[in-house]
Length: 270
Image (cartoon, rainbow, N blue to C red; front, side):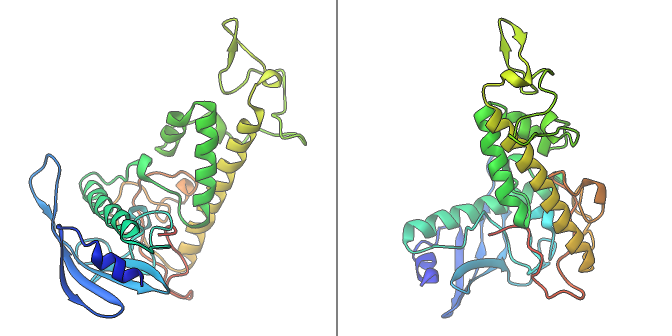
């Protein structure tokens, strides 16, 4: 059972208050690095269809009950990492899970203080997440990962330009124009036709567009569910529809309610 492994790996910063067959109740006491204070939150860790899920014992006590930009999902659970609660079949897996939870709690402290979620720690919501991972991989191949992270934080970037077009061979049209990556030969910028990594360029452009579209769809559904911005973050796709596709640490909203079943909208795959 996943919870057995979780219990075997309980760290010293989590005090178990009670243990049942399908849940663990306890309190965190996470010391802050280079800061005064302790993160003290009462949590419920439980088995959710064979996966480990975690939430506040009383959602909304320390954190917003639901806030996608803080990865507090529509079902009131924490999204501590991509598929973090799946496949916990050993104490080692459980130890990693506890580490992700501890990091998540520290990021919540950052979000509380700054109204931002660090872009380097951000994964796009719902179905947009895999597209972001593919885009990051392409950006790494092109040597522009930092530029991609800056774009997530709101900076303009060539690969997010909706005017860029690809031909039937997945090559940039207008091949005589300079390569947007900035590649040079003999100190001169080369043309798009001479780009040495056209596949990575095409992948980055397409995956970033998919990420934006899926993110916009995510917030559209959240708004259709009647979700409202909780007001704790600087930017939010619920409050600012124009920023739907821009993955910023933003002011996010409450969870999936209304005519849709609760849990229909999730920040990501935890």
